[in-house]
Length: 191
Image (tube, rainbow, N blue to C red; front, top):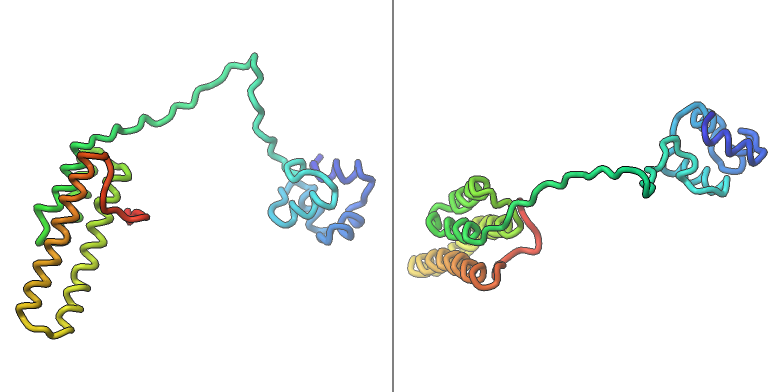
């Protein structure tokens, strides 16, 4: 016998009376009583109408809390990979080698992340910062070209763009050494 039917009969209600009180169709009530579990709005409405808690209408029982005399089973937690700050620094500095080849300043640290098994928030932030720099550098360069200030300005702009990434990488490496965190980071991760 379904829980809804048991509770409905305890409250001395017919299916039609429950339908009128709850504004749930008789057909829906019949389906629930024949084994379909109520969900969402139907579950809330029936529970409110019958003045019971929602879980009392569900067919699946709630998990039973272990009694003191029962044997507890241990759930094995995944072993966390230790954070190796030397590897993180290497991953960060690997972007420096490929600073003039923008796709590689992302791909090489990404590859090293998997090889060195350092899939942690710091490494993801290092790669995210490089991704943002790789997207922003051409945009800033193109905006500089549209200003039409001449070739010397364009050359200076290119050098400044590259030096900005060198500064980001070196400053982050220094911060990893000192405080085990990044100086330049995003409030979100792109990977």
